[in-house]
Length: 303
Image (cartoon, rainbow, N blue to C red; front, side, top):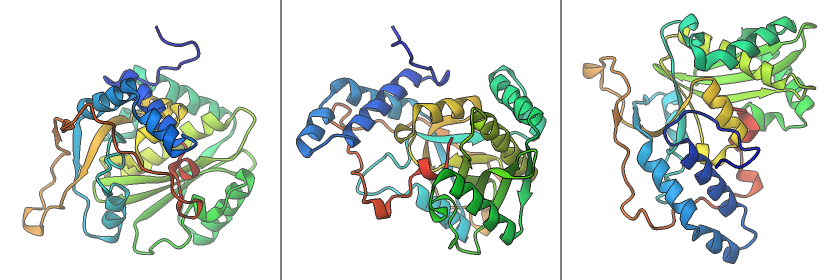
């Protein structure tokens, strides 16, 4: 029986295991000391849930390019010290051919409803290319959130990165949300999606801006959108939002980009996810980094 107050995030095949695994990983990372960490690591239900998720999610190959944007996206999913949490499960959104197709269907009902509500409030979205306006928006949104602007949008990003910034403005023309994506051919990475604190309108702002961002990427020829960081490290609310906006959990595997002679457009390849050799062994989890090194997805992406 589902615990009272538990909100099912999706119809994903591994949904229940994903939630159990996320709570397990959170408990391990939040352990007060090494002894407590070892005690939590030994939880069999948590270990089994992580193994189930890793076995269940499909593998999606990502042929990031050797251009600055591709190098940046590849760095999001670099394996370190044998840890798999940088790649599985990762949220990926497959983009259709048109904006209308993205909004179609019963699973997108919440998305359409929130878009309608935001539009009724007078909120509108636009792609912003002017550096001065981007700087003004970042400063305003960061101030409203009480956040360091550099932790929200990287002001020192490589100018060679193909970045797209979209902004949501309220009825009075004030910026209330911002998104930043990095585009690498058919692939894009959602680097930032944040809103200002509001009295109940934050969700509708987020849905509207996300739909606008996706529409802009579709118009630009992007077919796959991903978010950095394991879904096991995100909040239940974030996973709920990802389901309502069409994301799915996958094991993302960066692969070499096609050579110029073989640069034929091919869809993402799915293969069965690798099964851990020692499924009963406790998974290795990343230790919390020092505050100076941490630029978590929670600070930059609310999906």
